[in-house]
Image (cartoon, rainbow, N blue to C red; front, side, top):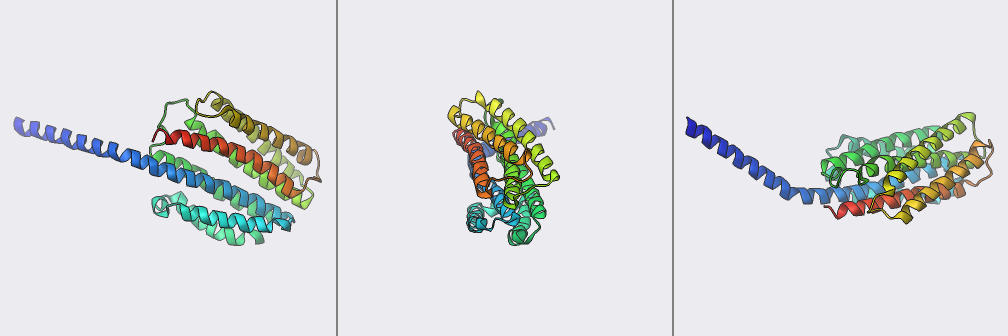
Length: 274
Protein backbone atom coordinates (compact mmCIF):
# COMPACT_ATOMS: atom_id res chain seq x y z
CA UNK A 1 0.00 0.00 0.00
CA UNK A 2 2.81 2.38 0.94
CA UNK A 3 4.54 1.63 -2.37
CA UNK A 4 1.33 2.40 -4.25
CA UNK A 5 0.89 5.68 -2.38
CA UNK A 6 4.49 6.63 -3.04
CA UNK A 7 4.12 5.77 -6.71
CA UNK A 8 0.94 7.81 -6.92
CA UNK A 9 2.67 10.79 -5.32
CA UNK A 10 5.57 10.56 -7.75
CA UNK A 11 3.16 10.29 -10.67
CA UNK A 12 1.27 13.35 -9.46
CA UNK A 13 4.50 15.35 -9.20
CA UNK A 14 5.51 14.26 -12.69
CA UNK A 15 2.13 15.30 -14.13
CA UNK A 16 2.31 18.68 -12.39
CA UNK A 17 5.87 19.20 -13.64
CA UNK A 18 4.87 18.37 -17.21
CA UNK A 19 1.92 20.75 -17.06
CA UNK A 20 4.10 23.54 -15.67
CA UNK A 21 6.70 23.00 -18.41
CA UNK A 22 4.05 22.97 -21.11
CA UNK A 23 2.48 26.12 -19.71
CA UNK A 24 5.82 27.90 -19.54
CA UNK A 25 6.53 26.95 -23.13
CA UNK A 26 3.14 28.26 -24.23
CA UNK A 27 3.34 31.52 -22.27
CA UNK A 28 5.64 33.50 -24.65
CA UNK A 29 3.51 32.58 -27.66
CA UNK A 30 0.35 33.33 -25.69
CA UNK A 31 1.69 36.71 -24.65
CA UNK A 32 2.77 37.51 -28.20
CA UNK A 33 -0.74 36.70 -29.44
CA UNK A 34 -2.24 38.84 -26.70
CA UNK A 35 0.00 41.76 -27.57
CA UNK A 36 -1.02 41.50 -31.22
CA UNK A 37 -4.68 41.61 -30.19
CA UNK A 38 -4.06 44.56 -27.88
CA UNK A 39 -2.45 46.56 -30.66
CA UNK A 40 -5.39 45.81 -32.92
CA UNK A 41 -7.91 46.74 -30.23
CA UNK A 42 -6.06 49.96 -29.46
CA UNK A 43 -6.46 51.10 -33.09
CA UNK A 44 -10.09 49.98 -33.18
CA UNK A 45 -10.79 51.97 -30.00
CA UNK A 46 -9.28 55.12 -31.47
CA UNK A 47 -11.21 54.84 -34.74
CA UNK A 48 -14.54 54.05 -33.06
CA UNK A 49 -14.08 57.14 -30.92
CA UNK A 50 -13.49 59.18 -34.09
CA UNK A 51 -16.63 57.73 -35.69
CA UNK A 52 -18.64 58.84 -32.66
CA UNK A 53 -17.34 62.42 -32.94
CA UNK A 54 -17.78 62.73 -36.70
CA UNK A 55 -21.30 61.30 -36.78
CA UNK A 56 -22.35 63.52 -33.88
CA UNK A 57 -21.05 66.56 -35.78
CA UNK A 58 -22.87 65.45 -38.94
CA UNK A 59 -26.14 65.02 -37.07
CA UNK A 60 -25.58 68.41 -35.47
CA UNK A 61 -25.69 69.96 -38.93
CA UNK A 62 -22.16 69.90 -40.36
CA UNK A 63 -22.64 67.70 -43.41
CA UNK A 64 -19.15 68.52 -44.68
CA UNK A 65 -17.97 65.77 -42.29
CA UNK A 66 -19.55 63.01 -44.42
CA UNK A 67 -16.36 62.17 -46.41
CA UNK A 68 -14.46 61.75 -43.13
CA UNK A 69 -17.22 59.46 -41.85
CA UNK A 70 -16.96 57.31 -44.98
CA UNK A 71 -13.19 57.12 -44.56
CA UNK A 72 -13.26 56.20 -40.88
CA UNK A 73 -15.77 53.45 -41.61
CA UNK A 74 -13.37 51.97 -44.16
CA UNK A 75 -10.61 52.21 -41.57
CA UNK A 76 -12.74 50.42 -38.96
CA UNK A 77 -13.55 47.70 -41.49
CA UNK A 78 -9.80 47.23 -41.93
CA UNK A 79 -9.30 47.08 -38.16
CA UNK A 80 -11.92 44.37 -37.85
CA UNK A 81 -10.41 42.43 -40.74
CA UNK A 82 -6.94 42.55 -39.15
CA UNK A 83 -8.19 41.32 -35.78
CA UNK A 84 -8.35 37.54 -35.50
CA UNK A 85 -12.04 36.95 -34.82
CA UNK A 86 -11.37 33.32 -33.85
CA UNK A 87 -9.20 34.52 -30.95
CA UNK A 88 -11.96 36.79 -29.70
CA UNK A 89 -15.10 34.83 -30.49
CA UNK A 90 -15.31 33.28 -27.01
CA UNK A 91 -15.47 36.73 -25.39
CA UNK A 92 -19.04 37.72 -24.55
CA UNK A 93 -18.04 41.38 -24.80
CA UNK A 94 -16.64 40.86 -28.31
CA UNK A 95 -19.83 39.20 -29.45
CA UNK A 96 -21.91 42.00 -27.93
CA UNK A 97 -19.68 44.61 -29.56
CA UNK A 98 -19.81 42.96 -33.00
CA UNK A 99 -23.59 42.78 -32.93
CA UNK A 100 -23.96 46.35 -31.68
CA UNK A 101 -21.53 47.82 -34.22
CA UNK A 102 -23.16 46.04 -37.16
CA UNK A 103 -26.44 47.75 -36.24
CA UNK A 104 -25.04 51.14 -35.22
CA UNK A 105 -22.88 51.65 -38.31
CA UNK A 106 -25.89 51.53 -40.61
CA UNK A 107 -28.21 53.52 -38.36
CA UNK A 108 -25.97 56.23 -36.90
CA UNK A 109 -26.63 58.92 -39.52
CA UNK A 110 -30.39 58.60 -39.16
CA UNK A 111 -30.56 58.62 -35.36
CA UNK A 112 -31.35 61.67 -33.22
CA UNK A 113 -28.03 63.21 -32.20
CA UNK A 114 -28.46 62.33 -28.50
CA UNK A 115 -29.30 58.70 -29.33
CA UNK A 116 -26.26 58.40 -31.59
CA UNK A 117 -24.01 59.68 -28.83
CA UNK A 118 -25.60 57.37 -26.27
CA UNK A 119 -25.27 54.32 -28.52
CA UNK A 120 -21.59 55.00 -29.20
CA UNK A 121 -20.89 55.50 -25.51
CA UNK A 122 -22.52 52.14 -24.75
CA UNK A 123 -20.58 50.48 -27.57
CA UNK A 124 -17.25 51.76 -26.26
CA UNK A 125 -18.20 50.82 -22.70
CA UNK A 126 -17.79 47.21 -23.91
CA UNK A 127 -14.49 47.78 -25.71
CA UNK A 128 -12.43 49.09 -22.78
CA UNK A 129 -13.16 46.15 -20.43
CA UNK A 130 -12.54 43.78 -23.35
CA UNK A 131 -9.04 45.23 -23.72
CA UNK A 132 -8.40 44.54 -20.03
CA UNK A 133 -9.80 41.00 -20.42
CA UNK A 134 -7.43 40.29 -23.31
CA UNK A 135 -4.46 41.57 -21.32
CA UNK A 136 -5.37 39.46 -18.29
CA UNK A 137 -6.10 36.26 -20.23
CA UNK A 138 -2.81 36.50 -22.13
CA UNK A 139 -0.70 37.05 -18.99
CA UNK A 140 0.17 40.66 -19.86
CA UNK A 141 -1.28 42.64 -16.98
CA UNK A 142 1.39 41.65 -14.48
CA UNK A 143 4.23 40.91 -16.88
CA UNK A 144 6.56 43.58 -15.50
CA UNK A 145 7.22 44.91 -12.03
CA UNK A 146 4.47 46.58 -9.98
CA UNK A 147 4.55 50.36 -10.18
CA UNK A 148 6.14 50.51 -13.63
CA UNK A 149 3.07 52.00 -15.29
CA UNK A 150 1.43 48.88 -16.70
CA UNK A 151 -1.69 49.30 -14.55
CA UNK A 152 -1.93 52.92 -15.70
CA UNK A 153 -1.97 51.78 -19.32
CA UNK A 154 -5.11 49.71 -18.84
CA UNK A 155 -6.85 52.09 -16.50
CA UNK A 156 -6.20 55.82 -16.28
CA UNK A 157 -4.63 56.37 -19.70
CA UNK A 158 -7.09 54.47 -21.90
CA UNK A 159 -10.04 55.77 -19.92
CA UNK A 160 -8.65 59.28 -20.35
CA UNK A 161 -8.89 58.81 -24.13
CA UNK A 162 -12.52 57.75 -23.70
CA UNK A 163 -13.48 60.79 -21.63
CA UNK A 164 -11.66 62.96 -24.16
CA UNK A 165 -13.50 61.17 -26.95
CA UNK A 166 -16.86 61.87 -25.33
CA UNK A 167 -15.93 65.54 -24.93
CA UNK A 168 -14.83 65.63 -28.59
CA UNK A 169 -18.14 64.15 -29.76
CA UNK A 170 -20.34 66.36 -27.59
CA UNK A 171 -18.39 69.50 -28.43
CA UNK A 172 -18.37 68.71 -32.15
CA UNK A 173 -22.14 68.31 -32.11
CA UNK A 174 -22.57 71.61 -30.27
CA UNK A 175 -20.21 73.43 -32.63
CA UNK A 176 -22.02 72.01 -35.66
CA UNK A 177 -25.39 73.15 -34.29
CA UNK A 178 -23.98 76.54 -33.27
CA UNK A 179 -25.76 76.39 -29.94
CA UNK A 180 -25.94 74.37 -26.74
CA UNK A 181 -28.43 73.58 -24.02
CA UNK A 182 -27.81 73.91 -20.31
CA UNK A 183 -27.82 70.11 -20.02
CA UNK A 184 -25.11 69.83 -22.69
CA UNK A 185 -22.93 72.41 -20.95
CA UNK A 186 -23.33 70.63 -17.62
CA UNK A 187 -22.37 67.32 -19.25
CA UNK A 188 -19.36 68.89 -20.93
CA UNK A 189 -18.27 70.46 -17.65
CA UNK A 190 -18.51 67.05 -15.96
CA UNK A 191 -16.39 65.49 -18.71
CA UNK A 192 -13.78 68.21 -18.26
CA UNK A 193 -13.52 67.42 -14.56
CA UNK A 194 -13.10 63.71 -15.30
CA UNK A 195 -10.47 64.44 -17.96
CA UNK A 196 -8.55 66.76 -15.67
CA UNK A 197 -8.54 64.27 -12.79
CA UNK A 198 -7.70 61.15 -14.81
CA UNK A 199 -5.09 62.74 -17.06
CA UNK A 200 -3.33 64.30 -14.07
CA UNK A 201 -3.22 60.93 -12.30
CA UNK A 202 -2.02 59.07 -15.39
CA UNK A 203 0.62 61.57 -16.39
CA UNK A 204 1.93 61.90 -12.83
CA UNK A 205 2.11 58.11 -12.40
CA UNK A 206 3.96 57.76 -15.69
CA UNK A 207 6.38 60.64 -15.12
CA UNK A 208 8.83 58.31 -13.33
CA UNK A 209 8.35 55.48 -15.82
CA UNK A 210 11.80 54.78 -17.27
CA UNK A 211 10.37 53.33 -20.48
CA UNK A 212 8.09 56.23 -21.34
CA UNK A 213 9.57 59.26 -23.08
CA UNK A 214 9.33 62.57 -21.25
CA UNK A 215 8.63 64.44 -24.50
CA UNK A 216 5.57 62.34 -25.32
CA UNK A 217 4.24 62.78 -21.78
CA UNK A 218 4.79 66.52 -22.00
CA UNK A 219 2.90 66.62 -25.29
CA UNK A 220 0.09 64.54 -23.79
CA UNK A 221 -0.27 66.95 -20.86
CA UNK A 222 -0.02 70.12 -22.95
CA UNK A 223 -2.61 69.05 -25.52
CA UNK A 224 -5.10 68.16 -22.78
CA UNK A 225 -4.57 71.54 -21.10
CA UNK A 226 -5.08 73.32 -24.43
CA UNK A 227 -8.28 71.42 -25.17
CA UNK A 228 -9.73 72.07 -21.71
CA UNK A 229 -9.01 75.79 -22.19
CA UNK A 230 -10.81 75.77 -25.56
CA UNK A 231 -13.82 73.99 -24.08
CA UNK A 232 -14.03 76.48 -21.23
CA UNK A 233 -13.80 79.48 -23.55
CA UNK A 234 -15.92 78.27 -26.47
CA UNK A 235 -18.51 76.01 -24.85
CA UNK A 236 -18.83 76.47 -21.10
CA UNK A 237 -18.73 80.27 -21.13
CA UNK A 238 -20.91 80.66 -24.24
CA UNK A 239 -24.20 79.10 -25.31
CA UNK A 240 -23.50 79.86 -29.00
CA UNK A 241 -19.92 78.78 -29.85
CA UNK A 242 -18.24 80.32 -32.88
CA UNK A 243 -15.61 77.63 -33.36
CA UNK A 244 -16.18 75.49 -36.51
CA UNK A 245 -17.00 71.86 -35.76
CA UNK A 246 -14.11 70.53 -37.86
CA UNK A 247 -11.62 72.83 -36.09
CA UNK A 248 -12.73 71.66 -32.66
CA UNK A 249 -12.76 68.03 -33.78
CA UNK A 250 -9.17 68.33 -35.03
CA UNK A 251 -7.97 70.00 -31.81
CA UNK A 252 -9.60 67.31 -29.67
CA UNK A 253 -8.17 64.61 -31.93
CA UNK A 254 -4.69 66.05 -31.38
CA UNK A 255 -5.13 65.70 -27.61
CA UNK A 256 -6.44 62.14 -27.91
CA UNK A 257 -3.68 61.19 -30.35
CA UNK A 258 -1.08 62.39 -27.84
CA UNK A 259 -2.49 60.02 -25.21
CA UNK A 260 -2.45 57.11 -27.67
CA UNK A 261 1.19 57.92 -28.51
CA UNK A 262 2.06 57.20 -24.88
CA UNK A 263 -0.02 54.00 -24.99
CA UNK A 264 1.97 52.90 -28.05
CA UNK A 265 5.23 53.47 -26.19
CA UNK A 266 3.98 51.33 -23.33
CA UNK A 267 2.89 48.55 -25.67
CA UNK A 268 6.36 48.65 -27.17
CA UNK A 269 7.83 48.37 -23.68
CA UNK A 270 5.61 45.34 -23.03
CA UNK A 271 6.83 43.75 -26.24
CA UNK A 272 10.37 43.66 -24.87
CA UNK A 273 9.15 41.49 -21.97
CA UNK A 274 7.22 38.97 -24.10
